[in-house]
Length: 614
Image (cartoon, rainbow, N blue to C red; front, top):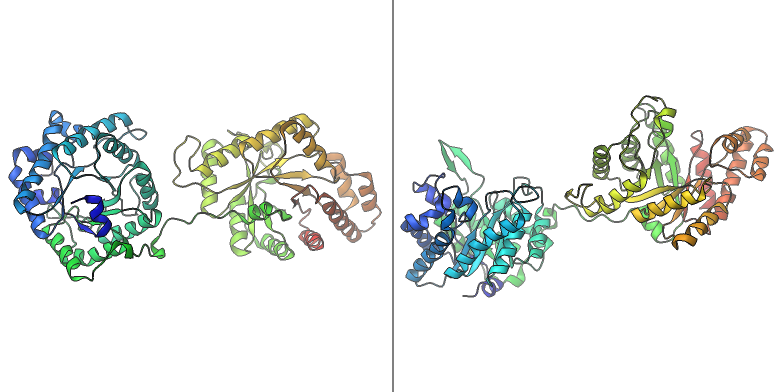
């Protein structure tokens, strides 16, 4: 019987547990079960015979722990070859006596030690140990190699490599999961299926874990991840319980019979049992297959979408999509409240959204003043108003641990746009004595996000489970005192991976082209979109203050004269709106959007500007 051909046409029935069967017959769990191939072969042979009589078409050798590390704990490291060969030969003898065409899977379990990077055993040492066992099983006449009950993707990948490099037999690679459908190292079924397939396994497996219900759920997720894969499923007889000093498994044989058909319909090519299962469980599964309508693998219903637990891949943010499509985008900055009340902020956000703002930017402790956490405000605005937000993310005041923890938390609550800035020094704020330290400058944080978190790893290279999907903005000053230094910083941010730039407030339309041309003369075309900073003027006093006291802001004399001639406050706001609208129309040739910074909470003024330019 050819293994891979057989499972392409029909669902193959494998055997059940070996270890728990031996235990019920008096072998203590502290004994070396694998050694019984040499010392008590009849005990092992009887169990193989019972499974064949129950209907098993595939028998797994009693070699689960027969590797040099596990055998070494029993003083049997030198017996690896002898024990593995004996395991295959025992199965072959029983099969020959049964006069049936039964396949033999050479069983390989975990090494019982942690391998790098989570342990001290080197990958090549692990691979050598697996290869030693594979060689013995293959030379003794196994039809396939079954690597099972693995919980570490690093380890199972080394086992698959060892099998593929040592023999030409088909390879099953099967993983076990905890109650939360993750491996002990936190990997989900869909990731496991993909990694096992990529490593070269011919059949993807799930075994042990909980009972049939859990493994059916996991199988569907694996099938969804690798639709063209072949699958092996061997559940425990439920979660084990200790009763009167004995380990008991609650799922009875009839229950397994019901699930056998569900496994087959979900795409399982091989079905059997693991811990706690008996020949009775296998017989019930056989009867279920025999009494059910004829079935071919091509008719498999792949998945019930409701049971897929992996989060769907994030779509680009609305801001990212609009900028990519060349649509002129409008972002508006809002400051978090100084106290608990968010009513005014949410009312302002609602007004801006209704007027046509694409994104609300939430500043983080502007001017180093104590305010509500920016990410909480972003969450409130997104949930209650329904408008996308951009979280300002300063590096100042955050060490490397806090930076990464805050990023994970931000992503977990649905924030995807982040604007990386240095942040205002605490010396100018409410608490000048507060810690002002930082581990990363903005370009370093951009790199951490784009080349680390968005690739699924943290600063140390350790997996964070799944990649984030942050769309990252950076600051740009179009009117710097030191142009060369600003161009240098801009290029550093571009190389780090910045997706877009928000500028300091400008009042001259030609400020942008001047700096962009200077940058492109040195570094080539700037691909990232620029959203020009617009800070509307509300009065002559306001204009004079900005022009004379705020570094980097230059307001043309003509604009200052216009607002000075306005007279009263109401007329001053109207002129401020007119000046802002005029400037926005002038910059549309080079800016891909605007970043409006309302003054004195005049959200009504900003709403009027948005409505006029839409």
